[in-house]
Amino acid sequence: MSSFFAFLDDIAVLAKAAAASVDDIAAGAGKAASKCAAVVIDDAAVTPQYVQGISPARELPVVAAIAKRSLINKGIIIVAIMILSAIAPWIFPWALIVGGCYLAYEGAEKIIHRVQHGSKADAAQEIVDRSPKDEKSIIQGAATTDFVLSAEIMLISVDALESGDWWMRLIMLIVVAVLMTLLVYGSVGLLIKVDDAGRWLAERGAEKASSFLQAFGVGLVKLMPKVFALLTVVGVAAMLWVGGHLLIVNLAQVGLPLFATIVHDLTSQISNGFLLWCADTLLSACFGIVVGAVLAGIVMLVKRARNEGEEGSGSI
Image (tube, rainbow, N blue to C red; front, side):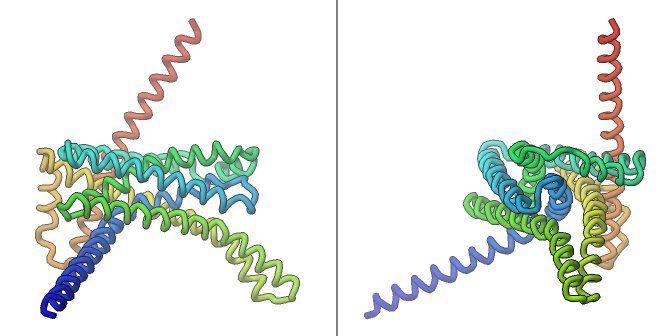
């Protein structure tokens, strides 16, 4: 009889350990996911452009196909990360520096493009006027963009995980991958259908002579372009902040602590936690936009030199 109770006690211990592991996985995945906010917002803001010009009946199937490819992308990236974490963990700070540069460049390039081209009305008209694209090529293009963004998400996630256990880190990364994919493409699916719902409500309101339904539906249709515009602005700001933060932290890890020291000295006198976060975020964003502007300038100079070289060779 005593052995039976000992057996039950062992089961209870195992259950507690399993529950603790689940809690650790949830906490670690949640922390890692929160660090990816910038890339997630940017992903959600970028993806809807791929369904422009597609019939409403095909929008959700196309988004679902892109989401499936996104999961495959993240699976490939997780395998690569786990192999590298076992044989070359020193590579991650450098990879995060590259990722930070990419985010800073993307954020600065979008600001420069906005300043140079002003309103996006022309771009929107161009999307409306273009001929319908083959769905396969649309999904392929979206999957290529998603691979870069997914790599950013998984690299930021693995940097945020504190567990040293290989299997725990693997499970946490899988949880983050599934969670982020559902969050991004679930949100995109909802957002691209809001205007359809608005049109339906407006039509129903007109049929039933309900001014409220009609006004509400029209309001939803008019609201969505502003929502996407706001997402873009928030995404750019978040990219600059996270990109700058990744650069400052990981440059210190590879032996260049100057920028981290400057940020520490400037914020060391702030005692309020929220104000400290705001100051750190602002300094990271400023650093991100400086680095991003430099990289954008280099890219523009390279493109200009290449174009001049092609024109010169063509005139010979």
